[in-house]
Length: 203
Image (cartoon, rainbow, N blue to C red):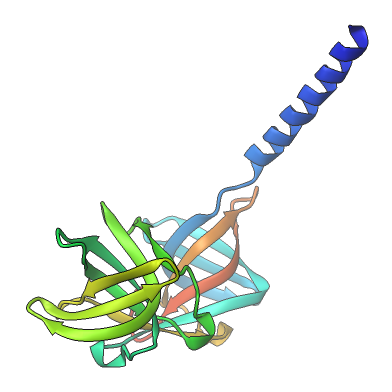
């Protein structure tokens, strides 16, 4: 009995230690703000809430420039993403549309809830047929598990993603980071950053 209890105790402590270790792993955060200074692999910035930020950039950083686009840029076969609101007929009314670079095809493919607006969705997939509807163009977006029809109204912001480099990280540019990892000193490790070009503010 003593031997069994000791073994059970060791197993419990090991499981507890593993759980504690997992609990200490920082959860990736979304960051939005404006770049103030770029120096080497470090960005000094201000968040959209006014707090100072220090971003430590990975050696193999992915820089994605976000530029203005239009409905004419959404071609058949393009890979896009759209934050949208579900409609009674099962379609999705776009809040925004982003066109991925070819090298980013497959990013986040599928249909899921989105945190960009209450009760909203995100659809990432390949553009199929496009028709003109009463409320605007209707795009069929196909992904591995199905497809959705996205209604794109005339006032919906459309942007295009272009893979860039660190030269795009200029003071005054707006940026977003989808998965920043906070470190004990308060700075953030960043492996991908979206940066606005021509006044665009990435979401």
